[in-house]
Image (cartoon, rainbow, N blue to C red; front, side):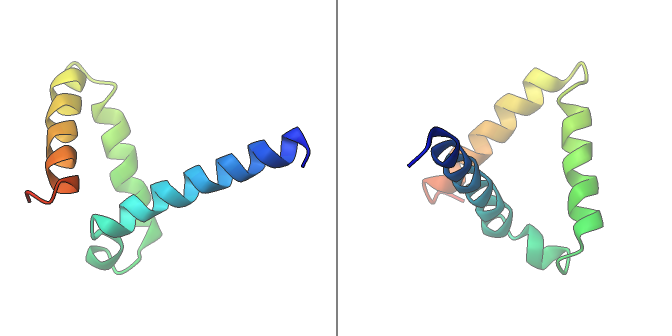
Length: 73
């Protein structure tokens, strides 16, 4: 397999995994699969991560995510 094919498959897998997180979090169902709403929420997150509260949000969200992945939520 060529190097570009390997990289393309890695990128595809990465994108599928990220999409899986959106589904796992219940975002798709909660928004009735409204992609504009999902995209808007992601833009809001990106804006928050560029603000003066970025580190606080990152730490809090990371803890929530770790707890959820361990099944503690």
